[in-house]
Length: 375
Length: 69
Image (cartoon, rainbow over all chains, first blue to last red; front, side, top):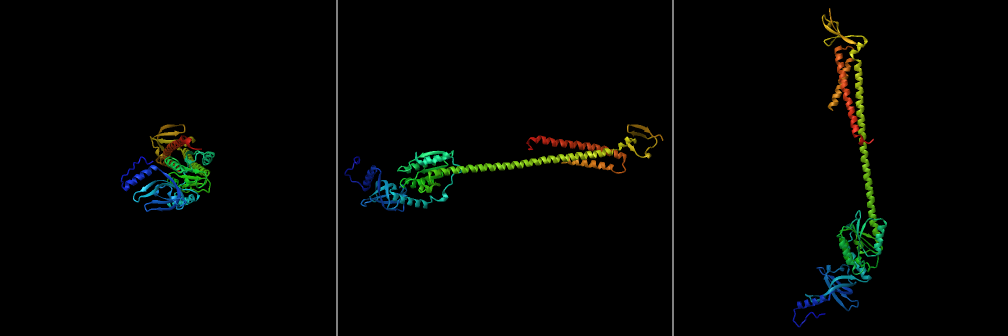
């Protein structure tokens, strides 16, 4: 395998030699090593150093890298049995052989449990589980991203409940492996895609299982994917007793996939009932307004009646006065045989006015006659 | 309001004219003059009142469709 490296008996500088060796190591590719973490240290500039040894204690390799580049490192502590993925490298300044880790994961029940506790503590102190950062479910959930295993019981339990309740929610299914080595990557990729879409909610579910089965749900990578999701996340894993890191970071934790569906359904139900109440309230308000208008119109009617009464009263008052006036008509006396004497349209009521030669008119009930006073 | 005031003052004047006839001594010429004025006023007042009545009825008719019973 070294044939294409034409190593001749040339004299090389140390740097050149290390460069050649690192080239060879790079050709060798990635390795996965299993061992026990006998020592774990962090430098001031956040580089991590691990002494990984075989259980027998007679073989050891030094592992290091910049901590943020080592996936899963947060959960690791001394004494744990782990699998480390990485590649070989010689660190030029010291000439030491170093296994550059890219990924580290605990194996075995004891280590997994310890890793779970370590990660839980670290993420808790970082504030990933803080109750005040948990978001409420949207008032109305119309479109959700469902991340779970293909043909899984979790999928059918979840969708069945929504279907039974005649839910109109649109479910976009993201089929992923919920356990195994590819699970973390697939779930993370699903999250990355889902958050770029217009979902009301992201639902991450799976059935229960052993700590090893639930490894992805206890991984830092998925915890961070949930934490940074701009869309609220519901996590429902298996049975109530399984509280995964994902459960703790989620905005809402459901005890089972079915429970997650119930939460979503009841959220929509309460929105609809609230809407009904609002419609009822609007209806009541409108009725109140309508009653007010009717009242105003009634008042208008009353005004009309008052006006009409007033006019009628005035008319009858006028009639009365008119009748009175008619009774007082000075010409009425003519009917009783009296006469009215006038001169130049002036009625004469005294004999003194009837001087000799004065032209007068005598008005009786049936006519007027002109005369002249003779003496 | 001006029209209503005019109507009122006409009614007041008519009442005053009638009062004249309630006294014992009536001057014939004044009586006839007042009588004529009174009849004229009463006729005017009645015409105005009739037109007011008509207007009220018209207004009611115009908006009747929208007035709930």
